[in-house]
Image (cartoon, rainbow, N blue to C red; front, side, top):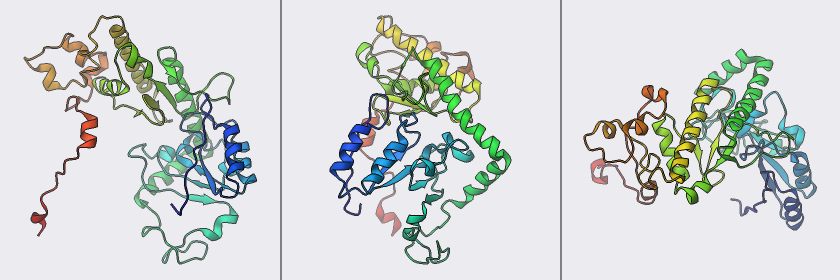
Length: 347
């Protein structure tokens, strides 16, 4: 874009930006450095302990700092991006201000800039920006405007104290779940901002070891969660073979406990495979998800019970059933099938 190229900055073992690597690359590209993009708290689920130093170093070499506001629900009422060095910050309303965390977030939200960048903002022929009518980048100046009344009402009802409490609860919920799962699974990053080893608003579970010990991959766990009545959390992003879990402030303790209990139960199923008590190929994870049609079929040739397949926990009797069994995801991604009518039908 604009003849620019991306230079990747390393992360350290705690999930923070590697400040030494950033300083070296900032100096190396000082004559070309345009900007850095950071997410705070990061997608690794940590509060960057050196965020001010990172911003200062980029500014020192003439660059600007763009802060991704996707994780604003861990900042509202607690901190302000401009205070630690951000020059540009966007707030896409996903998670934050009562908007669901689905589909990457709806196309709506403000972009805030510091005063020195205001003259460079795009304008709009109908809704002028800073007096400018030219340079529009979108035909809809308010984006998905129908979403805004939800956010407005939420902010009005919550007030300053309520919004701050929501941010605190988002962080608390993530740490509650992480502490319950720690030991059964490895938490990939914890950052260095807190001596107690706390995470931020989300955390990453590592499933890589199970591929060697039991032949189980993260996709098997994601499919198995469907048998427990859950859609899988974010898979293999931002770290491969991992699940990223962010409960936000909205989930109640009962729902969080059910997800944790499901993951702990799945860990025990993996342990049964590791101990040789279940087959490495025909087991509840490799064969998941199990549909209602499969469970009630007369043709049940699997070496485990129907109950283990479909009702591993008591609450599963009231779950939403998966309607399709295991599909080959990679094949589907690489072999697209157009379901559109032939072009002749449009003539």
